[in-house]
Length: 241
Image (tube, rainbow, N blue to C red; front, side, top):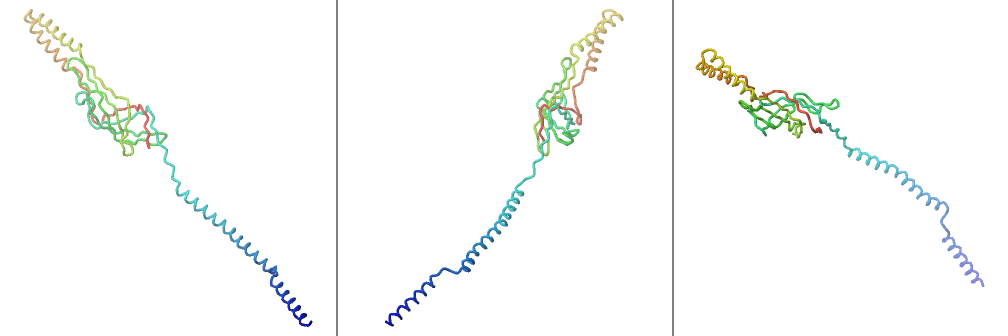
C-alpha cells in the first residue's frame, strides 16, 4: 500500500514537472520579441526617405547636366533687301564675256532687328549675264551683272538677286546721216567755190569730216572699274545661322 502511494506521488510530481516545461513563454519575453521587429521597421522607414532623396537629387543632377543651352535664333534677311557691293576687278561690255565670274565685297553691313546679319567686307561673287560691245556704226553696248553667292560666317551661301544692267545706245542711222550730211555739205561748199571740180573736192573733204566726226563723237563701250559700287536686290530671303 505504501509503495503505491509513493509511486502515485512520483507520478504526480513528474506530471507537474512536464506541465511546467510546456508552459508558454513569459509575457516580458513576448513583448521584447515583438518590439524588435517594430524597431527594425522604424529603422527601415527612417532610412527609406533618405535613400529616395538621394535618388531624386542624383536624377535631378543628371537631368540638369543633360540640358543643353537653347540654340540662338537664326536671322532672316528678307527678300527685297539691297546688297551694295564694290567690284573686285573691272568688268565691261567689251572686256567681259557672258558666263564670266567676278568678285566683290559688301560695302555696308546688313542688319536685321538691330543685329548684324552680314558684316561689311563680306566676300561675294557674281556672274556676267550678258556683255555686248558697241558696234562701230550701229547697235549698242550692254552689260548685265548678277550676284550669285556671299560668304557668311566663313561659308559660301548661294543667293538670288536682281540684275544690274548698263546700256549705251549706238549712233546707228544718225551716224550715217551725219557722215552723208558732211559729204553733202562739203559738195555744196565746193560747188559754190569753184563749180563741178570744186564740188568733187569739197565732197571728199566733207565726207572725211563727217566720218571723222562720227568716229570721234560715237559712244564708248561700257566699263565698270574695280571698286565701283553696285546695288543688287535680293529676290529670295537668306537665313543666317
